[in-house]
Image (tube, rainbow, N blue to C red; front, side):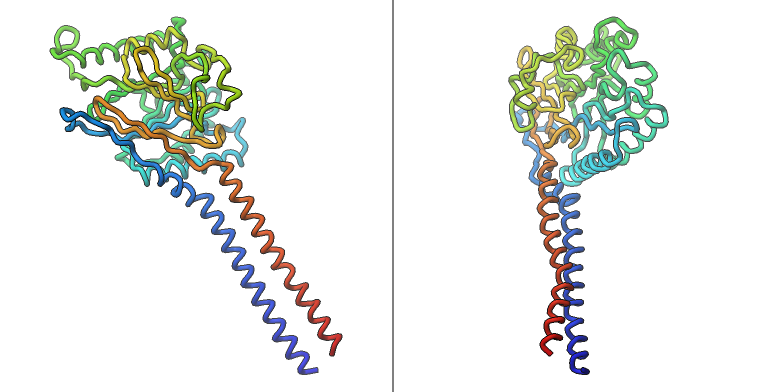
Length: 389
């Protein structure tokens, strides 16, 4: 009987140690999966992105190059339509993507092309303050990196819902400047919701501001500053980069292509002026007043490249959030006073992350079943030995 007890004690210790080891493996595997899917995958994907090289002529070789990131349509969810799990998942994705891009790519300036918030058009003062606080946490950045924001229709409402109060509330948080110059490059940031063209007070003020910006840009192109151009600090003699939320007028996305373009079944759908895109009239005014060399816009959540007028390139920047796209991305721009080069940087695909979780869950379930099965196997073997003795 003593021998049986001794044997039982030794055999009991072995499965216990085995189960403890399997349990440790299970915990380590869970931690490894979370670490990969929630942290490491962003470094692995964004590490492949690189700044494009600007080809400059020999006479312009002394020009400085500015590294700029362009992203759009973050749509931070509010208190009305935002489920807590949806907020947690999508805002964590944007935070990790943005912080990883800052660390790996080290841009000098970041432009967000509107629809920062999803419910700014109707949020209460407290809800607005909460949304702003979350935005500042997600898109925190070092002091040497500038963050510039363009207003979108979800931030202040479409034309029929926007108000002076909402615009001032937005501009209190984000700098309202329309013209921004750095390293010899001019950027014009437009409130495209106010370009309705119906003569409303907000629209009239927006047009007056753009006409003044146009005057300053025209003065920068003159060699001798006199008359209306005299007595003020001239801007760099550089055709501007136009930044806005609504795209310039185009009939549809039928001519758009690429992995992050609109789905095939949606590309041929006609766009509605003043809702999906700017009106023809407003688009022509912007091109005529500002004569931009490059236009970047958001709003459609999909990518597109369009040539306007005399060959002005417009880039529609896709949404930065998994909520709007399975494959979000942003634009990396290397710009000088006369030239620019653009490249696209894709973020991790949401379905790839979900697939990794599903595969890991299957493997972990098998390991867990093995862990549960070991006590039953031990008991069965013990009963067999006791019967034979």
